[in-house]
Length: 375
Image 1 (tube, rainbow, N blue to C red):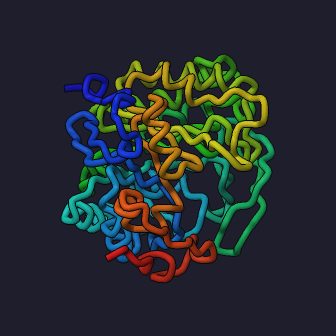
Image 2 (image 1 turned 90 degrees about the vertical axis):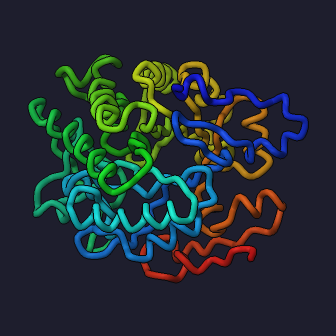
Image 3 (image 1 turned 135 degrees about the vertical axis):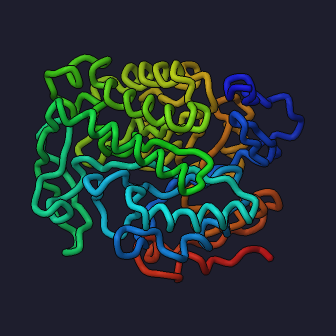
């Protein structure tokens, strides 16, 4: 049964909408016990060789009551690195490190996808033996890279040569293959937050004049080639894709995000991908500007698989999004970071642990595996 047939699209008929997050849902062959997704969150705790920290097995297993866990961004190649102490999935040691994580999550009854990541221009020569980071176009980028020397201004990248792009696709394909060897249940492609795939898709960051730039169909070509290659490894139903249509950091912009992401969602739907994961905040500084139409409800009509929403949802907002038919699942970031048993806390409306922002990135146990569960 395909995900398009099996996802419960609009459970609005449920009498008590407060139960929507706890309804089971089927993603292809995966049975999820609830609709709460642990969102991908960089934690900056990898060890030498960008191998997952041994504590990561405990960290993720503690959160196995999520309907689905999506890991922190995981580099598909050394070229994809842009932050210190972030894990990869391109070496045998990294694969072995992730295998301990997936085994621990599965023993705890959970399901876990690896997020495949290449930062593109959001990097620094310090990570690449002095070479420039790669991007669709050689454009200025506002922002800082987190290097072994500390925060360092991002440099103007080099534009990828046309004949290099098949190699970039292969990096993602091989990452998908390694994720399968590491025992993951599927993969999510990181096409959001101003990283490489996002850079190619949006016209503010892609000024190319070859087959991978200019028209919308050309700008979408490389991300779609990646999605197709990864689906060829896993089967489309075990592949998700994350986007952030309103993301504006790292000099990211698009002249018509509704047109761009509507087209892209339709093309991903045509590939039969398992889910589309949309980061569009419903409040705060990352929300759509006042008077600007939200993109997520439009994408709901363009993508036939499951839709995961992310960005400022609490218990009530998550239940309401499902009740309205706007989403099938809801992803939570910081709430899962600080509350390993978040589904139980939501179900009983228990108090939530307060997150310690000073321990979000780097360090070891503190702020990582020491948040208490209700029990």
